Length: 310
Image (cartoon, rainbow, N blue to C red; front, side):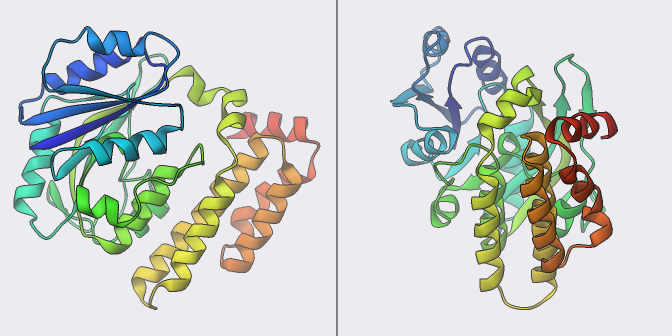
């Protein structure tokens, strides 16, 4: 049995489609735990219209998506937990594939599959996943940090299933940050657990207007520094070896993500500082030079050029 955890906040137009994508699964041994994070629209009423005894609604005051997911983990009745955001959806064979990984790779605690982006105009875009350590359709992702350093993330929130004890052992999702909380959680899981992975793209990341709205990006920003500090702490505690070197490359990528976010929220001088620390840590000056150049410009001009050139 699988517990499907769906954090819900003001998704009245999307949540029914998301639920139906679960109910249409070829694998039917599941419960759905919808955690209402203090929605102020009709999201809960829309869930209540879907008549299936496997759906449970748990309510909490608005505390953010991490707190909602953690509440869902706590409420889950089964040992396997699959996460699904309230505006995303699954192919009908998604849970069957994830459960197949669980059965085949008994020494793994994390199970993931490929996914597809759907932009605001409805156009589907494939992920770019490089350097997978196996040629077959599925296998064990032994080099997670190497893959994520040169690709789209092979793990994404709506395309992962995890053993309850494993996610609880790393403290669940960090509360109080508005973006990137999932990447930190995947890093913690990858350090301590084996990951089984399927190349099949069976989950759909549905992009909404708020994902590309600059004002929304500003509202979500602020957690990147916390995540960076946590990644550096994890790095300091790791033993020397190739896995640590892969993790270092991932941290350098996060430095760049952090610096680019600062450019987007018009904090160019801070972006320069982050780029400097990245180079000191091991990043190349060539890689961070464009960020330094943008950071030296007036914020409005920097932001204009950033969107023009990317």
